[in-house]
Image 1 (spheres, one colour):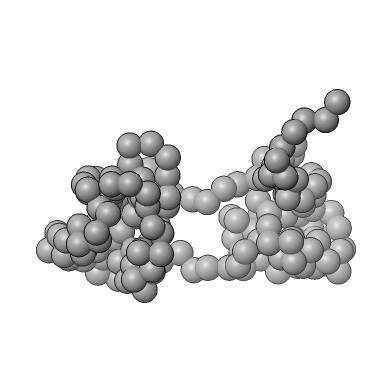
Image 2 (cartoon, helix red, strand yellow):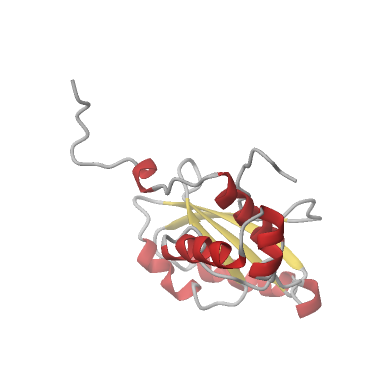
Length: 168
């Protein structure tokens, strides 16, 4: 007997079946996205054209969403890293946050479940710039409260790394 799902598909159905080599390629690219297909081929024991084909498939299926430079905030004059937890009254209108997409200090915006409804990851030059950003968020009509968490130091920052059977 089938499970009634009201036409809602599991997010798992969208997952691509990744084999051990795909996962190892992803892990190697996360560690250094500048690796050439020749370098990758030596590390996964496939030919460069085979590696190229696999990487292109991973891009086509949005497993690899792009390549980005990871910049050092303090070197750019933005040494104050903070997380802003926003509590709202009623439902959150994510379209009201569109103006924050273009603000360079805003690195991430997440809609979350729980007491906090939205989390901003921001990197500002100083506390004055942080205060101005918090005031801008408070000005949104549905915002009830903003809690600010200033980062003192970071021990680990990274994106997801795929598990592999052979991590070497």
